[in-house]
Image (cartoon, rainbow, N blue to C red; front, side, top):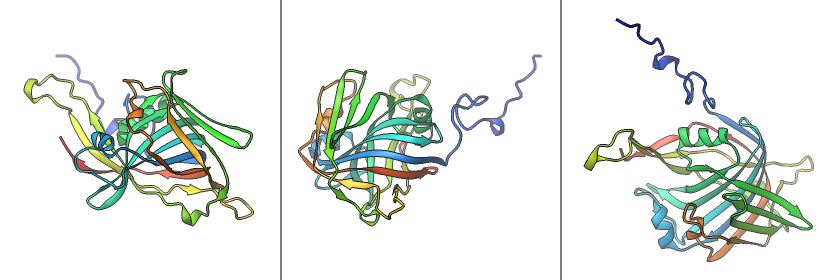
Length: 256
């Protein structure tokens, strides 16, 4: 009789591959996060098409696009683009994330495997020219999915900036074809609560600004249909620097 393997679940690493984990366990730390945040009214039917069962759409239908350059994180520096839909779960306000792009693999692996963030690799830029800031989202590089432009006018006190928990649909496909009973091996709504804090400078001024801006979804693409959450009216534009600690999430609903 052959010898049995000695690797047991109590020896597994925090992520795959379990004998050489790609990422560690939460919490994850972010410092000096440079973010442009565009909030806008969108088509409610388009938002409902993306919202999982169990989540209630907030009215009026409102979406947010965040374009970020994380100058330090426990995954190293990287860039990210996040689309969110305002919603609620059992009366609690949340933001559901149907689309995300990141610029390298470590935060992609952590986001997908632990929390269910629907991350793909993409090209994201956040830049400044003269008095204007511009964020671009491309996938593949050269195919412009979104362009956000704003300028900073008014300082925003930290007390006036509010965040709410985010929620993701975590799905792990089944490795086996079960015929009529086919479906994912796991499907959960996973919520994450954290406190996104604007950085306060030594003179007491918050490193957060608001001002006029615009958001355009440039090139409709079947593979990454961010354009379906179209812009009906820009509600607010913010630019600033933040710190964040991302803890474990919480499973709030199980589909499978």
